[in-house]
Amino acid sequence: MTVYNFSAGPAMLPKPVLAQIKEDIPSFQNSGMSVMEISHRSDLFDNVIADAENDLRELMNIPDNYKILFLQGGATLQFTALPMNLATQYNHIGLIDTGHWSTRAGEEAEKIGTEVTTVATSKNNDYHQLPEYTDDDNRYDYIHLTTNNTIEGTAFSKLPKTKNVLVGDMSSNFLAQQYNVEDFGAIYAGAQKNLGIAGLTVVIVRDDLIGKKSLPSMLDYQLLANKNSMLNTPPVFAIYAAGLTLKWLKNIGGIAEMEKINRQKSNQLYQFLDQSKMFNNLIKPADRSLTNIPFVTGNKELDQEFIAQAADRGLVNIKGHRLVGGMRASLYNAMPIEGVVALTDFLEEFEAKHLEEN
Image 1 (tube, one colour):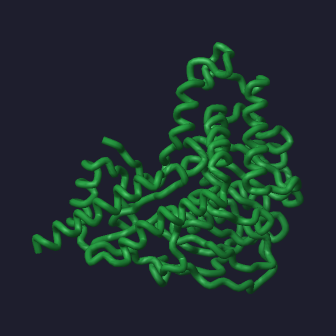
Image 2 (spheres, one colour):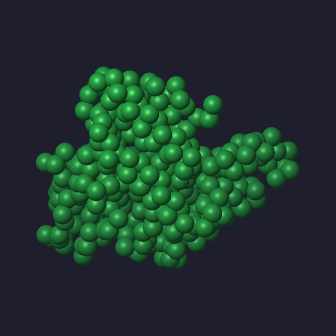
């Protein structure tokens, strides 16, 4: 039975990436050492991290005045590192509140004494749509935005206009749809959804924004950039896996082609949900995510029955986040269209059976 993993992360890896990892585990590039054993000080790894940076720059059209950092600690650590590095003039940031992870970003910034003002929120709409935002003050060090909301199922296709520096948590749709890097002062993303395996976080930051003050070494973007992300032992295997994933993405045509595929996948599921008599997606259509699609029946017992039967069919990790319940299908880059077809086929079958019984 083919298994399709709809987990919000760690997520599926592309099959060619898995095949290459399998080949490289015993002896990486005929070195006699496993890819998990090579030194971060070796020429072997120098090539790995250099290729990963070059491929990422090419795919996202990242200008030379932006630094690329390959870090540890997850995107959650960047909730702290970002205000430490960027909130240096006013010690004040604006937060566009679109759900759980944007709220967490604000909470962590406040813990280190940064003032956080919520400049827009869709909390009153249960985060079922994105809030309207217009600048009300230019005395923010930056405006924080979560481009895709993993739990709630919303995403920004068009960025809000701001005179302030924009910082984007792109963890759930990094490399899944196109954004202009120069619209941001900084972008950050955990790797375990679209870029490989857990243990790596990518930070892309404009060089004029960093190096403003002395910080603890492992949180200092300027120092980390000066050391090419190797102030200490970096997550070697995770960077290697990210490099393979970037080459896979280049081979299929880059981010523009990936976005077309992701739209095809998400449209397949949304079209079913919109005509369904049993399942419902509650998100405003214009604000829907391409990568994280929550849906419900409105009956918790029926939701649980569907989740269990889906797993029996090889459609795994489809349970919704505890904050919203129901189901969630995460359609990251490595999820093939066949997985979405299998899911919609089972949704149709499950619905038809229950409607017939009732």
